Image 1 (cartoon, helix red, strand yellow):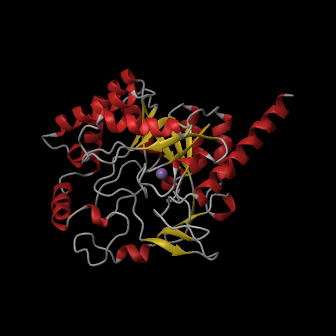
Image 2 (spheres, rainbow, N blue to C red):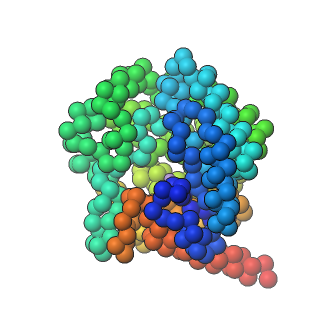
Length: 352
Ligand SMILES: [Mn+2]
């Protein structure tokens, strides 16, 4: 297991020097943010990130994400050019030594939450998704703004996108993903890079937009499209775990035994009866996921990929990017280190 941590570059209020001080920290997870989606990342930007990371004594091994242009997901006429650009990014990142590229195939919106600063019992704040809040939201009228991404689209762009997605049901989205994978996976293989798709968050359709990277049968289908280690998963425990139909530990066991998990996001979520959820502190007792069981499965299967603590709460008065403060994610990393050491030593004892 290689411990990693998301860093948003020099603009991130969390300094890379601080990330390095987290025990057992190995790699940074980052991306080039100065290029519009669909275009080629400059070698200068890639190399600058690599230099900054290595100067801090960390590895530049994981990119999250190289985003997929909407027109690829929609299957529009210009997708071949956009896919060619995507392939060039894979080649450039491979040349810079990157091992894993995380991406997702969610239409229009990435992760969806209804509130980013819900105050929990202990005074910390967390990202939450409440059904009753969601039902009052309409991204097209925008009377209630959705936190996190509402500023990334203009109203008229959103109306147009929703209109285009009327032609794209789940099966069409699958076909468009297949077309994309057939093109990029051979390039990734040649570049020595492992592609790792992130599940949809939460793992079911929202606002009538299709979502397909959601559950076991669909993960199986995804992996079978191109049966290559370069076509793998970012297994996000919190995303898959925000629906009760996913048994996350079992999925971790299955796909890590297959060698198809290249990157794992570990976070806990507290599921409610009506399908709402709150992001919780990492230890098992705070949420619905058995994090010990998840780590045990990884350990049993000899997991050698990258792991990062995912979203944390805001604690100790820290301000910054919701979910991406230093303190709670560092606590998560320490908890994971503790579980891992215990698993290592109990395995040694069994052998002795
Ligand atoms: Mn995640």
